[in-house]
Amino acid sequence: MAEEEQRTEEQTEEQPATTEVEQAEEAGEKKDDKPDLPDNIVTIEDAGPCKKKVTIEIPRETIDYYTNNRYEELRKEAIVPGFRKGRAPRRLIEKRFGKEATEQIKLTLLAEASEAAIKDNEIDSLGEPDIDYENIELPEEGPMKFDFEMEVRPEFELPELEGIAVTKTKLEVTDEQVDAEIEQMLKWSGIWTPRSEGAIEPEDQIVADVLIKVEGLEEQEKLDNAEIFVRKNGFVGRIPVEKLDEFLVGAKAGQTKEFSVDVPKTYFREEYRGKKVDIKIEIKDVKWLKPAELDDIFLQRAGVESEDELRENIHNKLQSQLERQIRNEMSEQIYKYLHDKTEFDLPLDIVAQQADTVLRRQYANLLMKGVPREQISEYMEQLQAGSEEQARRQLKTFFIMDKVADKLGINVSEEEINGYIAQLAVQRNQRPERMREQMEHDGSLAQFSLEVRQEKCIEKLLETAKITEKKPDKKAEKAAKASDKPKKKTAKKTVKKAAKKKTEKKDS
Image (cartoon, helix red, strand yellow):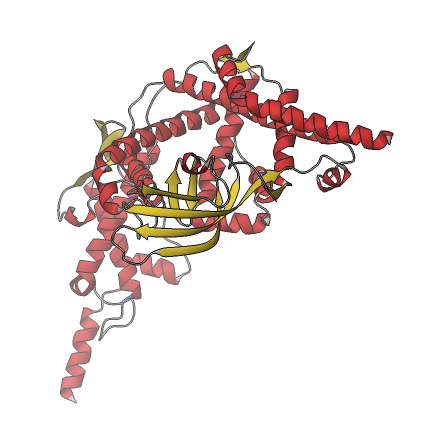
């Protein structure tokens, strides 16, 4: 009994008297707001291209305030045996919670000081500050000093944005182009017709029995009634054959053709990759693609009532394609002007990150095409150089267009984003809401928003551009006409022949 009385007396002696702060709180009064503390000492210096080194010194008064504040909070919340909640002396609180409290105080000071330094000095950062939290200690005496580096946006001046010289190529849809389009449509609606007499011609189709002998394999692969298209680069079964037309053109049904090919080392089917293949083709039938007639049935399938309406629809479609082509050419001139007239360093770390993304994308694309990993590794140095150049161009474009958008006051609203997504969804035959969900999920929505904003910037710059029209380059035009000449003659002949038949039918 005497021992219990003595222990009670000791505990009573250890409990401190109620402080003025506690009395004010018990009376329902609030503590004063954060007192005026001395400013942190902040020094900023360049640490490389688009990188700043920030050094901060936090005064002792600030450290003491945060320390006392934290322990006051702990004293109110902590449960210490032998003391009522909120009545334990600070020395016991420090002994029990000192390590955790010191770490929390340090992290709070570092976070608030770095955030204030960035905001007050208007540092246009590209990411979070690189603070080495583990190796910074909260000093028992004196100020706390620490530093960190961070990537910042490049500083540069934009060139003059009004009156940019742009050349607009004057392109027009010709009757020959419309004829060629109609010919292609007639072919798509055509039927394969037996070529009863005569030799195989390019673009024919043959039906044949095929024997395939792959290097290193004993058994031959046999294909009965295989359909083979006579093209420059075609397939016999699953074997790619360059200049296939040269092996087959001139042959007739009933004949046999034998030849060997070397399958490319980059072929996606591993069982044939890099091997020599012997091929034997026994030709059974030869067919040619007989185009459909330009008659009422064809027009009905095309959703028009007359040939004139069909030609008008095709003309409008081709004209839209030309306008997009012209628009893209003008946009590229704007981008080139901005790139050529703007010079600045790029943040190296971000270039490296972007180059890594580009490189991984190229690597994945090559794997999907069937290129072996070993072969990709041989060209890795070349791929890395290309990816870094691509990354630099992409980043430079981003920083330039971001500044252009700010200067021109161009933003993209949610309604505009939804409108563009709706257009894209229609093209891909998807629901707009489903497409938006996919873009949010794969992270492409943010990039899409940037591209929409860039597009709006280009439109604005083209409004004030100094545009000069020019005729198409004669050499390029001649080359195009030369390559299209046989096709155009055939197209004209097909269309005229169909039109003549239609007229004769009406007359009769």
